[in-house]
Image 1 (cartoon, rainbow, N blue to C red):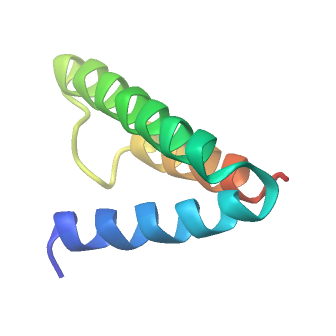
Image 2: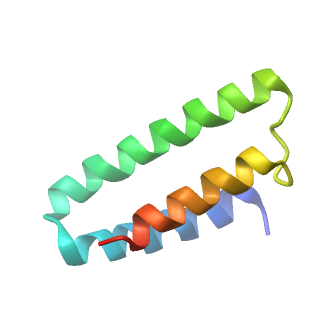
Length: 72
């Protein structure tokens, strides 16, 4: 599976979970904000040379993202 397909699944699941606790209009804003944060973190990681999926920074970012998605 490609990275864009996995990202689409993650965004869809996150959006569905966030809709349980938030107004759907605010969920769209939250998803957009999360995507911006992911792009910034990915850009910062690639400038250091850690853009691969097996890097500790990517694993930490994925765990933080999952924790935020499940925290409410």
